[in-house]
Length: 241
Image (cartoon, rainbow, N blue to C red; front, side, top):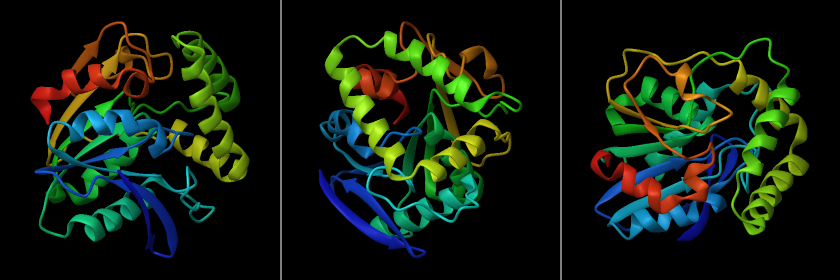
């Protein structure tokens, strides 16, 4: 995949793009992650003939942060402009959103449904987690999730990516965390197909909280399933892409 960048509404957005493929899949990564952690998933999809684009969401990876008054709506609109730039205004795309990326995907679908074949949500929630202690909740869920990682290499790879993002834009990411945790979505009037996949062992967004759309509960997988087990993800999504 080729790493490139574009100026979207004055913001430097970095992305990776396989360039060719019969249909286009856009992956929106999770909070504190970046495109880099999804390259194995992308390769699995490329091998099936898809074109895959993974942007670094604003303030993550190699992308610049947005205005201090960040909103997921603004983030979705930036992603729309990027996709318009890369694939044109006629071609529809399938969006796969993991965790926070699913929330971005929701707002994208709300505002630009005509550009979407299907919205696929992986371990993403639209429930509002108001009044939670942000750091306490994130630390507890992250600690339990990391304990489930199978190898030290996996832990180091993810920890490095998270630490790099936090050190680059700490205040921006703190604001982003508050936005994500206190966001109430799950609109019921989306004009595109929506598929929801929930890992049975997800400690961030328990599958029992998802009650608006029909969901598939994937057994024996954790919150970071798309990063940890990409081949299983592609096998699971095979009939939905």
